[in-house]
Image (cartoon, rainbow, N blue to C red; front, side):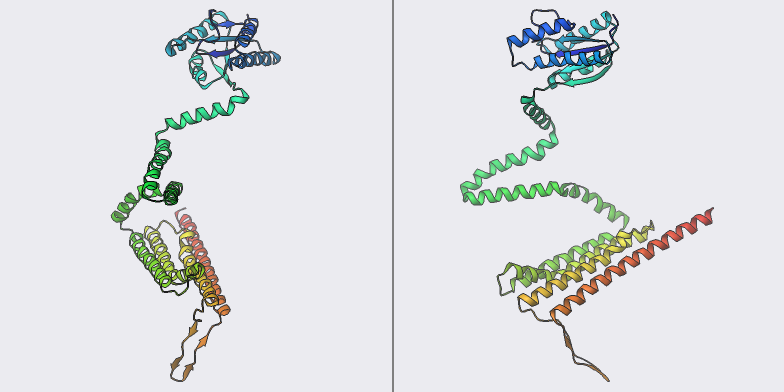
Length: 382
């Protein structure tokens, strides 16, 4: 017989071919088996597997390709079932001129036998049949099974859920249900942010980065410490200004905090970016435009935020207007000047834009100079 492709329907548990010696070979034998199984148990998903095998064989025949459909059946014993199906494949290879196979399965359990068949006969395709009504349930089951097999996912998801479920009734015993619910939700939210923002990975790498910075003598390590101190001072300055306020309006309190803390926070950003810039200069590996722009960008953003917060405070909280003090320089005498809120805001915005443009031009100039030096060095080498 000139048969080239084996269409193999897998029955690992051996439920289909009861009372018959497997394998069941040929279209007529498989059709008879479909009728017998369907009449006995119409809800059996393996009926669809057999019908799919017949359909695949018909499609191959329509493409002028000879096909042999067969049902490979195992036993209740896992090892015995695998060996039985391996023997059946070997017997079919001996009896028929098989060059390839298409495997039809109806579950992930049966699909595990594909490597056994593939070790004896090239497998061109694996056709997985799932009944439409059961597709979502089947997919969910195997996704859940795969999820439970992943140790990292279990620690990340199941452990926090378990801790929350244990902590909830304990908190409920010592406080009100509202406090217990709010505490659990807040802790879960913080954990999700902790994992989602990659803070855990950053903290795991931080000791190594600090050690490397200490051994290599990086300037950025010192400037980072300075930046942290400035940021801390800024937060305290903002908090003190809020505590001294006579109003309880959240908007005004937020504006006062921003107005007092922004200069310190801007200084912190400037110190950190300057340290990184100096490290790049020391290494002489070429300055990236992002590092050159960062100090100017920090100052520009600080000026704009400071201007807007001061402007809004002057409008909402009776904040003192910005005034240049009087100055006496001998023949020259300046009587002082009080800026209107709009004028003051415009000056801060213009200053921020000017600083940003200066940073852009500076970065472009340095980058162009580096490119020219690199080309000059290459020409000299050539």
